[in-house]
Image 1: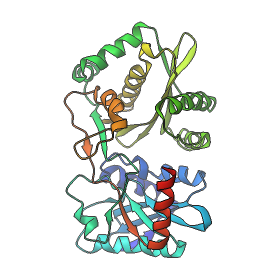
Image 2: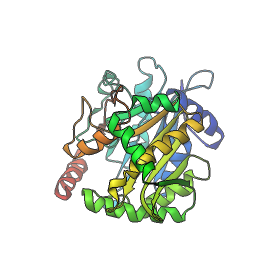
Image 3: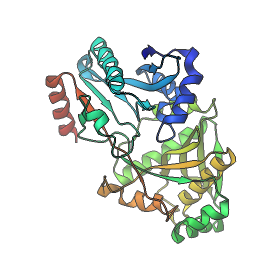
Image 4: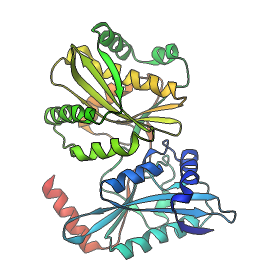
Length: 338
C-alpha cells in the first residue's frame, strides 16, 4: 500500500472510486466539490491510499478552514471514502492526515464519513472520538427514483401527492436554470426564509461560487417556481454519480398556500430520472439516532415523499484534537456565539 497526494491526472480515477464506494452518492467528495471549496478560498488536500496495482482503496478530501489569529482545522466532509481495508491500513491513512495537520499547524481534525451505524469502531480504534456536534446531517432521507413516475407518486404519503397536484392546479410554473442571474433570485428568497425560520445562511458568494463551479460541468441546477409572474420558491440541486442531492431551498413569505416547494421537489426528481440516476437525496431529517426539534417541520415535508422508506443513519461526526488548549478556546468561543 502507498499513500499519494492526488493531482489532476487522477481526476477520473478519483471520481470513479468515490462514485463506487461512497455511502451517500459521494457529492461532497467529488473532484468538482474540491474545486468549489478552492474557489471559496479554502486550501484543500486530496489523498489516496493505493494498493500494489495502483488502484484506489481509500480517498480523502481535506478542507482547511481558517479561523482568527492564524488558527485552522482540517475537515473531511462525508469521508474518507474507503474500500475494504486490512488492519492497520486505515490507521496508516489517518497518520497522513495528522502529518498534514502538523505541517499546516491545525489544532483539530474533523470528519463525518457516510458509513452506516456499526462502523464506529473503525474510528474509535484509531484515536478518534465522537464530535460534540454534527456538520453534515447524521440522518438523510433518500428515495429510489428508478421506478416509474406512477410508482414514485403512489408510494408518497397522500398529503405530498395532493400538494403536488394542488401546485399544478394553481398553475405554478417550474423551470430549471444555469443562469447566474437566478442566483440573485435564490438569494433574495433565502434571506426571507432565514428571517422566518431563524437560521443563518451562507453568504451570497457561497452560492454563487457553487453555481460557477458546478453548473459548467452539468452537476448543478437552480430550480425555480413562478406563480403569477413572481418567483416564490427555489431549490439548489446537485447531480453526481447515481444520486441527485437537494442542497438548499428557499421560499417567499407570500403565496405559501400554492405549495410550490412540493412541485419543485417533484421536478427535481423527474430531472434525476431523466438523467438515469437511481437515487434522490432530500438531505437531513430526524431519525432514530438524531433528533432536532427545529427539524420537525422539514422532516415531515421530506418524509412525505415516501411512506415506505426509513432515513439512512450514519455514524456522525468524529474529531481528533491535536492542540487541546486552542481547541478549548475554540469551543468556548462557539458556545458564546451560540
